[in-house]
Image (cartoon, rainbow, N blue to C red):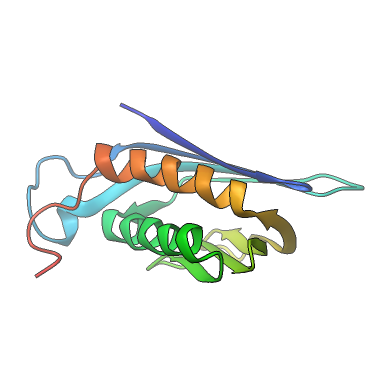
Length: 148
């Protein structure tokens, strides 16, 4: 089963496909919580820059990001960050009074990197992303005691 999340705003579209557990034979520990992902990133208003990468991302990284997005949606202020253990993808959402910015990057281990910053967003974007990351977390829950 593939679950899709699309982060879009003026000048940016990031499409994240979570395809499944990387090591489905494990039911606990870190190895049980890596997810196979496919990410496409398009950035630009005057020109278009494209990156495509297939990083593995931990279930808990998505869960933490989703939880932080929920707080932003409720309080309309603060920061939410998707922090990837292997530093191949990063997203940071900052909001104040329902308006905000998105910044981030997509990188591989050979020094290829596409970064973006100051992408303007509003609460409607955050609310949509909460729903999409809820779907990811529900479809691919944390396995085996990583919360303990």
